[in-house]
Image 1 (cartoon, rainbow, N blue to C red):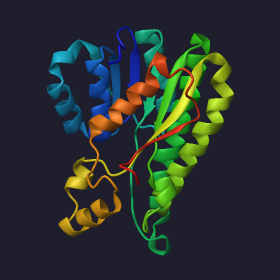
Image 2: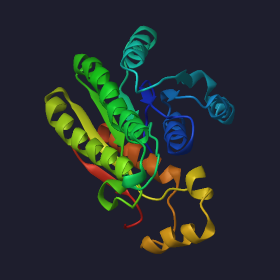
Image 3: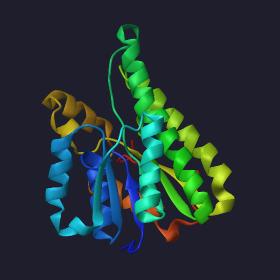
Amino acid sequence: MYDFRGQTIIITGGTRGIGKGISEGFLKAGARVIATYAANEAAAEQFKQDNSQFAQSIDVRKLDVTTYKEVEQFFVYVDTEYGSFEVMVNNAGIRKDSVLAMMKESDWHDVMSVNLAGTFYMCKFAVMSLMRKRYGRIINISSVMDRYAFEGQSNYAASKAGLVALTKSLSKEVATRSITVNCVSPGFITTELIQDLPDKLREAYLARIPLKRFGSVEEVAACVLFLASREASYVTGSILEVAGGL
């Protein structure tokens, strides 16, 4: 449906789960994909094997988005090897759930560091590059938990709400340079996280969803590709929910 031939796409957390689905969507649309991962070497290798037909278009890089210097060096690498890029998808994220009164201080800071500070670092260096190009697409992967905020997820919900606010503010700062900044906000998506849930909890989550099913990573990816396309040039500062009517 979309043609991304000749475009370079950066996707953090792009080798498994929702990120893998997004990476594969762009690969099928003809893009070069730089997919980053934090630590899971096995998943990164499996991603490459699963997409061996696109081997010439895949660049898998280990990156800790919470480390400012690593992010800076990553963009030096991108500029050196590719000259520029067109799209960045901030998908890297973690959860460390606990009721607030029992939450470890480190769990609060870890979630904020990856989900919010990591996105800030990536956006900071991406914007400097895209403003020179006077074109770009930034898509941040948020969550409907920024609104629903289930018990035990105060750190996660707060980080995702902050991500929405960051998106809206940044979109206004870069709009005159033809750079759009948007959020895709998934609900319950079929990944290893959902598959590992106890049956009773799965049923409870399904009961909340008007469409009575979990979403797929392909459905999330389709929304990301739309926002990344040239056809979406008048969409910025928006939050696109992929949540089955939650």
